[in-house]
Structure formats: structure tokens, C-alpha cells
Image (cartoon, rainbow over all chains, first blue to last red; front, side, top):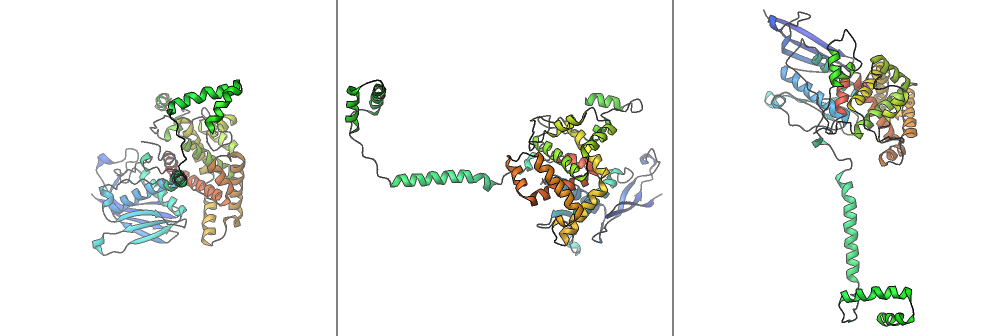
Length: 235
Length: 209
């Protein structure tokens, strides 16, 4: 015998009402309560009380809503949104997505129906408290093992591949750019300078260095005799 | 530790394992086996927001630890303070790393405190929303301004202003207010059915392979 049943999950700003069919197979009944699980959803309604809006749909809508809300909530908490490609079920219509509204402190919940069905897209701006209440209603549903036992929302931390560098690229590149440009300016300025005239000395540079070192030492240690050739060198 | 905890949890009637509540938060496979400085900073800031919410919050945290049976991990006031000093932003940063168990204990304490303070948190966030709708400065609301002021005072007195990030926050009142409110949002999420797990996972976002 097929029995239709209704479940409701409520939080202060959000009511989630599910209508479905109980699976009367005795094997699947809950061991403790003897209650049969509701394994098929015929209709799901999500009432957002503060903005007085209602979203409704079937099984796909509920799954997509739960996934989108859950992953957005985690991104909202950590500031890191995973860009994982949606799996097959989330590609089905109606699609649900949540984005932060720029400038305001709100979250835009978008319900996109199948483009062939002719229905229009629904957009609702919800506050953070409403978002939390929506997440909580979904978590209540998820915690209730007598409804949709197959549905599970896996929570896991976002991989470090999606981690944003703490400083934006432009900021990190500035020191490099400043360094390169100052080098270029210095090179340009030095290019303008005349090439210093070299006094033709016949000795090789290697010899010069070997010569000067002992000369400097000898300057310190002693006397006028050594300083004379030094002067002549400079002249 | 986890082994002994799982052994004990098989006989919950005999002795309530002190660490059993820690198992409500799943283990995270971290490459270094200890928390990253960013995670530690987030945990300490959450506790700082709790301190701005209620007076005598650190005593309440210790009482909660005792009540939950995790006073083996968070033993006393000094121990709690040392754990919190793993936040790299602190003046008294200890350069220690929190083990997963210690991090779990702190998050659970924060979560339970947030549940107790849920009404106040919701009221403050509702006030924030109303102030924003009316385009009024946040400080115009008495209780909200009290929370923000206390948070700013705690932040300024404990964080190391020589760190670039911290000094940017200290210089700008607006940024500090935003930080205080974002922490309040996190505390709100802690109060949910699975909220503590959500906050726990979000602490490790961008840390795992």
C-alpha cells in the first residue's frame, strides 16, 4: 500500500515542507520507531518567511537546493568558494545557485527553471540570518534518517588549489616592477654618460691588480719612496 | 588517543569517555598533522568574539569544558590562554601548534557557548541588518555598538600591532567592525543543527590537499 505523507522542517525564517510517498517495505522501516522512510519526494516547498517568497519543485529541486546552500554556506564561513564542477544531478533543471550580492550584505538565491519550459527565473535576496535558517532547515532534513535515506550532504574542507594568495597579483608584482624600472632608468642614465677615457696602459688588468694591492699595503706601512710611484700612476 | 577513545565509546554506560564529545567533529587529514597558523588564528578570534559578547566569558568557557568532560584537554585558565596564544596575531604568540584534539576542544567550547548565547547573537545580527537597511551607522544601535566597542578594545589590547594585517585592522574602525560581525555570523552558524561541523570544516578550507 502506498501512503503519501508530509514532513515539515522549520526554523525561524524558513519552512521546508516535503510531500512524498512512504516506502512500506518492512525491511526499510526504522528499527527504533518502526516508521517507514519517505524515500520518494513528490513535492518540496521552501518558504522564506521574511522575504515572503516560496520556492517549490520536485526531487531535483530539493537536491540542488541542498547542495547549493550547503557549499555556499561553507564558502561564506571561510571566504573560500570551491569551483568544483557540478556533478550530473546538479546540471539538471531547475538549477539553484547562490551568490553574494556586490556591495550589499545579502545573498542572491537564483532558481533557474528549464529554459524550454517557459517559466521565468526567480531571484530572491536573502539576509545572512535567512541563509542560516535555510541551511539549518536543510540540516534538519539531512539529520532525519526517516526521510530520503539516500540523500547525503558530504561536508569536506575545500582543497588548497582554490586558495587565493593573501596579496593580489598586482600587489605582489609591484616590487618587481619597481626594481626593473629603476634598473632601466639607471641603465638609461648611465648610457648618457660619456665613456670614461682609458689611459693606455700596457700592463694587463690582472697585473694592475696585483700591483695595486701591495702598493696600498705599502702606503700604510711606509714611506715616501712607495708613495711616489703611486702618484705618478694617478696622474 | 583516538584509539582509546573509540575503545571507551563502545561502553558508554560504563564510563563516559572524556574525549567522546571530541568525536562529534571528524578528523581532518592534514599534511603536517597539526593545525595551520591560519586555523589557529580563526579559532582564537571566534573565542575573542565570545568574550566581547558576554562578560566573564573565559570563566564560562572553562565551565563549559568541565561540563563537557574535556577538561583533560583544556585544563585551566593558563592552559586555555596558552592554547589561544597559538594565534600568530597575538602579542604573546607562542609559536606553538594546536593538535587536532586541542583545536576540536576549542571549537566545541565555542560552539556550546554560542548555543547558549544564540538569542543575543540573533538579536545583534538583526540589529545589524536593520541598521544597514536604514543606512544608519552601526554604532547607532546601543547593544550592537556595545559589542563592537568591546571587540575593538579586546582586539587592540591583545593583538600585535607590528604585524601588517593587525595594524591595518587597528587603524580602521570600520574594518574591525566588519571583522567583529563576520565572527558573529560564524558564531550564528555554530548554533545550527550541524553548524559546529560546518564551522569546523570551514576552518580547514584551503589547508588540505
